[in-house]
Image (cartoon, rainbow, N blue to C red; front, side, top):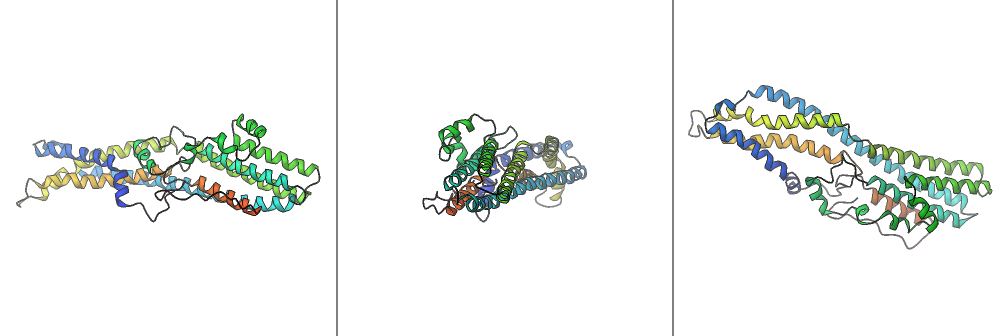
Length: 334
């Protein structure tokens, strides 16, 4: 997540410079050929304007869908924050009187769940964008914690060796950690360490965690529909290619009867670039937000949120050796 006031104009231009180079070439080729006498290359601008309207609608639709996915992902992790705090003090006050060691163990297992979940959500998918040149280059400005460490090493901080090996042999580690929490809770209930009401309260929190995990996995594992994504790409490409052809005659007529006659055609290059860059960049912005867990500069900062939860819960147990908060690097925090 970008934590600054805004992306600077320099960052934006540098981020889109590859597309700018390509758009200049696409605008320059028909302009040069027209100037050399290939007048037949000019096409009426009206059909291109109609195409542009369709492209604007479908790019806008994609951006709305991308923002909805991003905002839902942030709401999911907002719910995890609130539910974790509730889980912490309910568990501490219900079970702590009878078995402080078990409370500590379940707190640590919750940190392990947060860790396993964020590692699972950072796993790459074929439809994600962090591997493309445009996004990969910007990613050099910050670190993706889940790419710098291994899940095994992170879980060692929270789990016993026996439980660690058990969890690592499972396919969905986060789910199995939550199942272990439920198992421990049932044991405490059977021993009479918590009553019916307390068992219900704590169990409801575990159900909420499972529910939020499922919502996050749905966003992670179900991409923006490929049919919508594909048609947006194809229509945008057609529009970008045809825009310079549609403005040739208009800019050629611009200088008629003046000293600039015959030379105003060159205005076609910068103005075609401006129009096509706007559409292409709008599509790129939507693409940058459509996968909110992949590790881009516009994603939900699940690592920072997980650390914040751990600090809050450790504070509930009056621990003094708290882990440091995660701070932004170059205005980016993940």
